[in-house]
Structures are given as structure tokens and as C-alpha cells.
Length: 123
Image 1 (cartoon, rainbow, N blue to C red):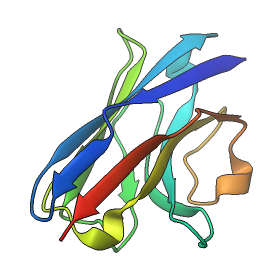
Image 2: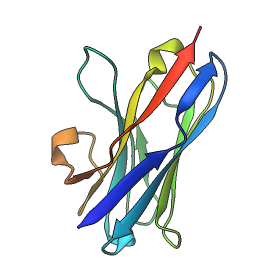
Image 3: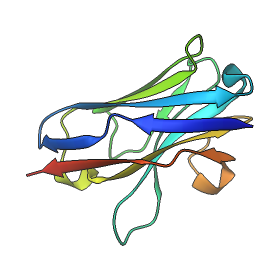
């Protein structure tokens, strides 16, 4: 198993930046594909970005492509989401997730989840 803890959320003005972190503990971190998802009030959980075990391949939702960057540091068992040019529609609780095979954009294919961190973008 792996335990995930997100941090780095907060309140930011539109156009600003935030960097989310996801710290992992437990089994071999580098064995997992990782993803970021978000959920706004009254909306379904949606895919944001995913990265493969090595960090060599990454995938993004169209809504964040060109603004967000996903990365990982296997030596430190950490994953990051650099969020730039934030918009009010990016406001949500952001979750990191892990699965033991290939990256996926489907939240129900992930096995492990963090507790989430709130990101609020004011316009």
C-alpha cells in the first residue's frame, strides 16, 4: 500500500501560480503511476494530469494543458503540480492518486488517494 498526503493549496488571485505537492509513504513509490484530480462543489471529480513511473511521460486535461506541469521525484517519494495562469474555474479540491500500472485519466482506476487540498482562485 501507499499513503498520500497533499499540500500547497491556498487562495490565489486569477493569473497567479501555486505548486501542489504530494508526499508518499509505504511501498516502492517508483512502482506507481500517479495522477492529479480535482473536484469542485456540485461537480464530478475530473482528471487534471498524470505521470508514469519514471516521469518520462505525462498527460494533461485539455483545460490545463500549457498552464499546469506535473512532475515527480522518486528519490524523495514526491509528486508535484505546478499551476500557472490560474483561472477561477480551477477552484476545486485537488487530490493526488496512485495506481500500480500505467497512468490513467479515469479516477476509478486509481487505488490510493490523498485527503485533498483546497485551491481557491479569486477573480
